[in-house]
Length: 338
Image (cartoon, rainbow, N blue to C red; front, side, top):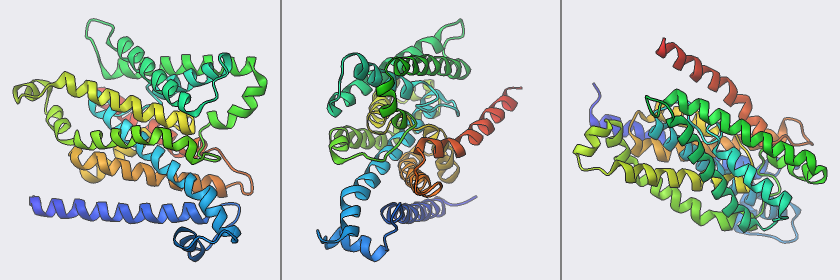
């Protein structure tokens, strides 16, 4: 059996490697696109900006913001998925699969269609509200029955709520064809064309939520030992669940308000993080945030290059690797229940 020191060394080594890969992904996001820019020019744009240089302008005005948005969204969705899987003890829990993203998206499109809301700040608050309402519906439907809340009921309730909100969203866009053309790319999920005016209103909520999530690692470890054990150790399990639920709503709702619907990231990353760090959520949560940011950065780079000079929605890229993983997790869960 490995000693505590050996385990800690391995975890720190893995974290350092993950950080190095993250930095390389960020550099790739700054360097690659319709116009490839050398790393020397990227570095020059960041530390010695030349307003006369086309490459420097591209890096500063377009790709830097896009990279920051991808980092924010990737970390947010991954941490939200990790918290959802921990609270529900369901390996298939994720903001997009449990209807949270669909609820936020529906509320945003509804407000834009019927109330002509165009303010980015308003989108943020509307996205939060939609994520909250969807979460409440899923929890309520998943709790109906003699046995109360169960993982399979949560999956079915999440699928039903997602289908409901997505259908309503599509119906509204059919009624408003002009808006459909402008919103369609955003519905598929994208970090293209986002600017700091879209990111800055949401960023404080995301940063605070991520900090709270990382601080919840130890309480979640205790909760994973069993709710009765946690209560006997003096933990207020209801308060912990409510706080985690609020963090999930803020992270998922804020992400949809900025980048639209990006699926499967919150499902895949928590499994990878637990596979690397084990069941210790003091490590799993920050590692999920780092891996989520890295994976979305790489997906965005691939989305720019795979059909260049055209660009594929980033949500399509995450679905390409997320769908097979979802099938694998679902089949594994079915086999365990047989």
